[in-house]
Image (cartoon, rainbow, N blue to C red; front, side):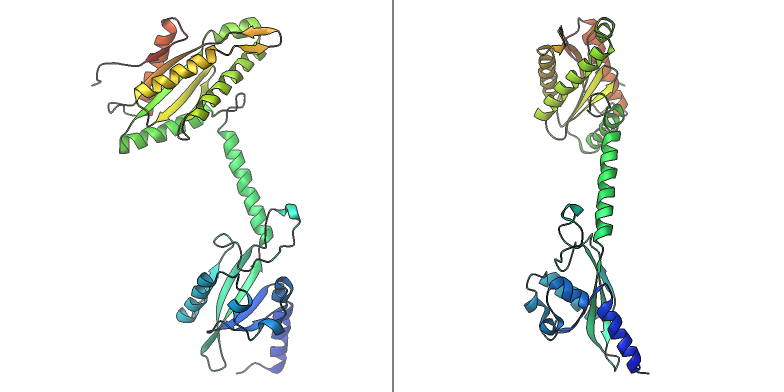
Length: 323
């Protein structure tokens, strides 16, 4: 049963007034309907757009993608959808948010609906544009906040470098990658010499400053390393550096450079100059290790050897092959 005249008038009124972009194209991509939302945001009245080829009027549209999308609806005679996360917008319309709102243009979700003529044959595709700018901005800000929170949870509160949890998580990942794909993996573990004495003589505030300064040197050294290398505070006055793809010889060079850097930069606190040195243990992953914990254990044994042999030195872990 065909729609009554009143129904058609009501439908036309809704299409014209609804706060959603609606336009209809035929199989030749000619526009047969252009509602008020599209008029207002495009600056093109329906009298100018209707009857014209969509891509002639809007050459800036992603023609190849959009034409393929519309033709697929004609071919499959089925609904299609695209979200702002897949493609931020179809038409680059200005959004209604302030300049600082976080979006450079209106974000749009689009639906593609097959439309039949009076005889039941599909002749048109109706495209609707929903303004989802607010949703996209809020979602983006939430994602940024979650990323920031995750970053904070990975950092040591005093020094700002990675904490032990993140350091071990990353070392576990690198160890598993090394075991699967081969290559080289080394680990440095070091601590500040006579740190308890620094706290006892100069106070805990001075101790905190020494930790921050050593961490700053670790950051500086890490800046000279590759992006795959990770440095962090292992706990107390202990720090660690993960060196993927680095053989023992290369790790020893890194360790000696770091030791020299720290020793050459005493910490100045008010009128006091506090000399600082570090002892370093270096270990390399080998096939006898059951997990990354053994790598830490070997580096710790080498660190202990550095301390018992006089401190302010680098020691490499070596042993006979394990059973």
